[in-house]
Image 1 (cartoon, rainbow, N blue to C red):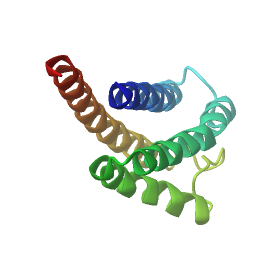
Image 2 (image 1 turned 180 degrees about the vertical axis):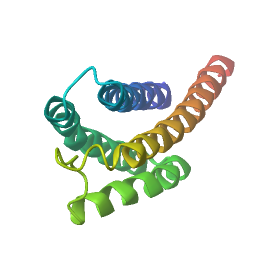
Image 3 (image 1 turned 30 degrees about the vertical axis):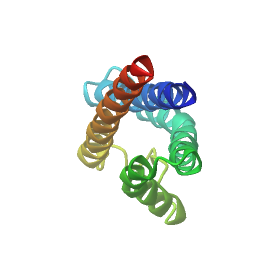
Image 4 (image 1 turned 30 degrees about the horizontal axis):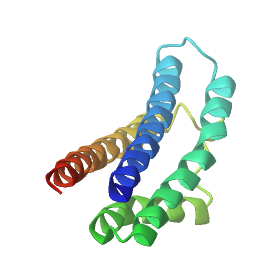
Length: 137
């Protein structure tokens, strides 16, 4: 039963990551179609970048501490990429360069989104597997 709770909480953390990434993509799309100015778009994105990084780091540590080594290893490349962006100080969107880097920023967030969706599918699979295993016992 504890394992089911672990998978359920990791599912909700992954959904929160998914919502953050979709929010960032919506801000970039609004900027691309001129619904929002560059300052507002970059400030909205920059407000959620650090919580995204912290949430991803917590998820990787959560998998590690609960003994789900495979999921922790699957989260490691995304965590490494976020840490690399943070240490190079490239994690925030620059107001003056946002139009020049718009395509790159969108591509970066779409790749992260696909990665999180794959992790969600794995978490759902293991959650269902654990629930069915608990029913058999």
